[in-house]
Length: 60
Image (cartoon, rainbow, N blue to C red; front, side):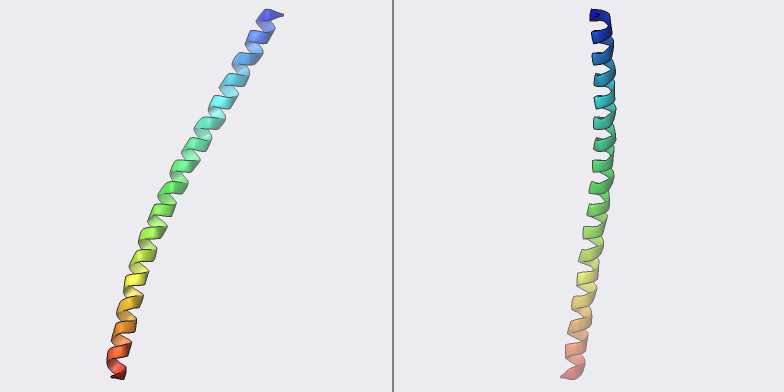
């Protein structure tokens, strides 16, 4: 019985560790995607600001 319990605990440990590793990898991927999205958004905001400035200059 003890051997069975140890085996089950070991299997559960490895399963949980695998789940943790997968979630950690997903977190890294999502963090990278968020970082790239924020950078792209900043670029778009700069472009939009330039366009608004040019548009205001043309109206003057």
